[in-house]
Image (cartoon, rainbow, N blue to C red; front, side, top):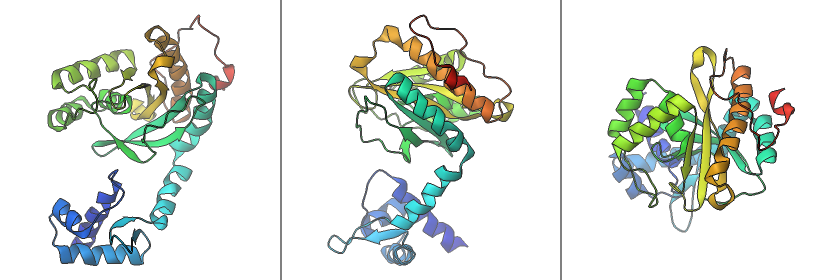
Length: 268
């Protein structure tokens, strides 16, 4: 059992955004011997969970691993309930919609629907999100257990991804507190230049936060004064999703924007 846990820890390294890994690099990252890494990788290749490039001799995720992972989205109740709501939200706003969840100490972007104003930023479904600089990460922090959130903020790396990235723990704590009160977060250019996102929480039974519903947009297309309209649309959509997932009440939203009427189909 110990060897299985060690092998799975090695396999987990392939969740990183880096596409290919060599034996030496993996040995350094995990602290395992090269011979141990090589044997484990060979077993994963035999199981078709990994593939090896015959020229570079490096390893990457195999099709079988994708097949197994895809079953999560296919059968996950939250993803199934979210998909039609996200499609309509993308159509309604013209912008891409995303669903993110907490897995351990990471926020994971698990589902996306691209809108007409799609901007390819390199972020893909299955990608871990920086907790400090993404709406998905910060909203999840805001609605997780406060002691856990405090501990995560204290030990996380606050990497600067752009000149707009929040790298101050004091600022991050203040933002998380604001999100907890108002029920949404907005970031502009903190992870990718020219990209903005707005995110709101999705709740389940006992008001447990299940995930974050968000839109991603080119910043030049959404002026600051238009953010509130998108927040209300997101709150409407998240309310529907939350109620479907067993939440007794959705605590945010409810005010009607004068900028445009919402489609009632979001609420059915």
